[in-house]
Image (cartoon, rainbow, N blue to C red; front, side, top):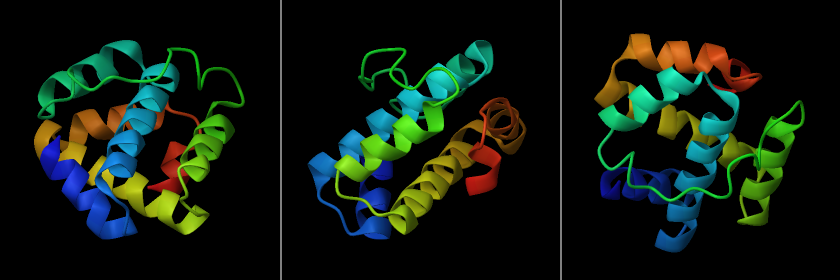
Length: 117
């Protein structure tokens, strides 16, 4: 995850703890909203994906999941443009390590995510 953290720091001009928290939030959102099997496979394929601690499961569930994730990212000090940038970076990192087909399946399974990436 170190590589991803560095990429998020660069794209959003954030510090290490914030970048690490962004990874946790983004992955928790995918776990809560995405296809369980596809997300599990994605986490197995990206370096350190299975080791990242995520907030309590269910934090981003239900119809308001995307809004809850956005609010969590904003509470870390990111504005909407930075949220979009870090989300695109996380997805790009995932594509690089897990392959486009799997990542596209995950993105399609998560409400509203395809509108961001």
